[in-house]
Amino acid sequence: MTTLNLLKAPTISSRSHQPLRVTAFGDSLIYGYGDPVHGGWVEQLRRQWMGTETGHVLYNLGVRGDTVSHVNHRLEQEFLLRGELRNKIPDLMILSVGVNDSARVGKRESRTMTDYDRFTLEIVNLLDKAQNLCPTIFVGMVPVDESKMPFLDCLHFNHEDQFRYKEMTKLACQVGNIPYLDIFDLWQERGQTWMRDRICQDGLHPNTNGYLALLEDICSWQPLMQLGQVSAS
Image (cartoon, rainbow, N blue to C red; front, side, top):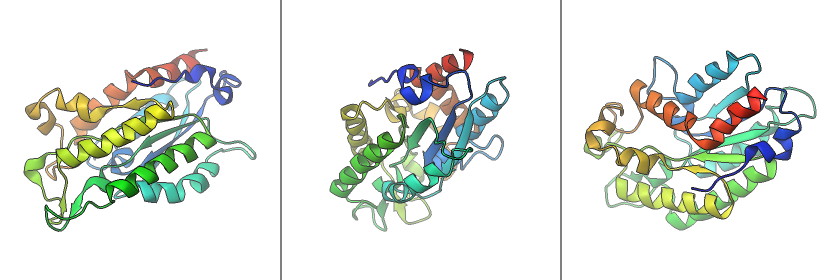
């Protein structure tokens, strides 16, 4: 797994005695859809940080249904509006997007929402744009429950396409030295029964228990653990 020493990043270490400003961009996995109890993993992390003496500030900028192209289009403007103070910008960006790009629209044999070659160009552009703004980390997609497809009677998500798209994203992150958390492989290793207990009836979104599992996985991931060290300093 690619690692990044966030403690040494100039925009963070120079003000490590203050709360960090963090933005989270992506799709419904960032937004927290499917968790009416806690609002998803980003919301739970926001509350955790807010409850500490020097808690970091976390902005949820997830939009349901977003593809990589959608996030690319809105990234810079929304990022620059989340600095809180004039002439200040966020210190860290969390990205999580790509599953909607992998969906096949209409029939199971149809083309994916975003053609694979187009997706490759878009994800490379997104990561490059993000890194030019601030240090960036990436949380990968959750595997769907294929037995519940199609989603909304028209979108066919499947593990084969998910794997191809997440592997492209993972490779692009490795090339750019961006930490990537492979949730897809991590959850697959825990088995179908474990996963199905943590996915909504729609087969696509994590349920409340799924987001709790996500939060645990993410908080035990080295880049997020480093943020806790920054706060403690």
